[in-house]
Image 1 (cartoon, helix red, strand yellow):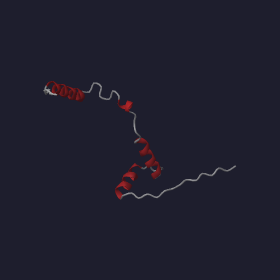
Image 2 (cartoon, one colour):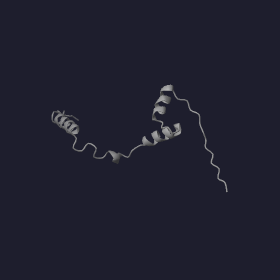
Image 3 (tube, helix red, strand yellow):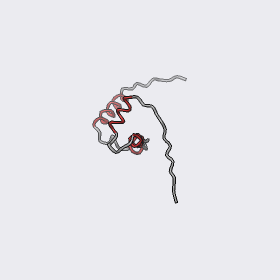
Image 4 (cartoon, one colour):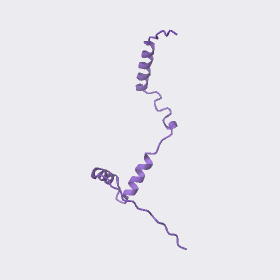
Length: 82
């Protein structure tokens, strides 16, 4: 029993700079398809939960929250007349 697999190939155009960048990432035994597939898999959309807790105990975030808190204290509300 024989199983035939047909692989569709597509021709794409890339700039010389893009080609050089891909060539640098390409291993000796890799194809350009391998490089493009690897890059596209690494760029998949992440879940929002992947970012949960990233700023926990961050000095930079402490500065930002402190500045926000300070600005909120200086807000002057205006009176609205109906």
